[in-house]
Length: 328
Image (cartoon, rainbow, N blue to C red; front, side, top):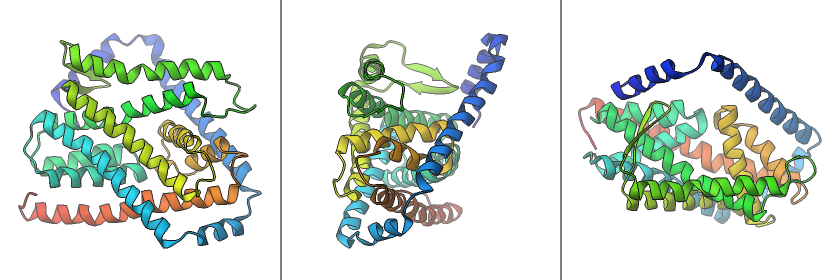
């Protein structure tokens, strides 16, 4: 949503952007299209010879206790993600209740996963927080804190994966282990740099792509990193659990992290097809395709679809209460 700070930043970007960069949006779309085409081809290639009856058999073997444990891990993950908005509450000093903040964050996260960041992460936050009485500038800063919190732990873990060699690149990746280690080392620098910046920087406000980011206190930044790392580890534990530990946990984590960024690049809602293609490519040869696809289908059901249904109910309840003039 527009505000004076972001509008000013956007105007400045237009003034300083060189004309030579006019080609970049088209190049980016072309690269995205090629990337998505490659993912689609890979998924088709993997799925055409798959024994779907065996996938059904693998799904039928899940016990109620295992699925319940997966659901508990999902609840933990959503709570960790929603904690980024609590950090935003602490930093902006707004006065909404913890329950209102957690409800808004969880609803936004569920819609974000299934319909994309603009609908869930941004749209629902602005809709609900503004209805609850927060100003646009405050909502923007809460959103910024959540975005940084989510991805700062991601960069640390992906860097460790690359540096530690947990990703088996095989012959098809064309990117050597040394190149991955160099990339991993660069990623590892992001989290410490952020913590140091929060601790010592005199400039506390930065504008990134039109979004004002206020650097939090170093303790809040450390909490962001701790929650982020823990959340990504918890998320990876869900498909690992559903695979019965048949694959090394760090291989599952590597597949999850790569699938997450692939979904962001392709802008496919819920990463539909993208996540499956990445998991099949990364874990090729380490586990049979039928139980892997069964685990991913079960993972989608418990992490995407079930929370979306619950979020829909919570959202309608919040809207009804707000129309009635009641604020949580």
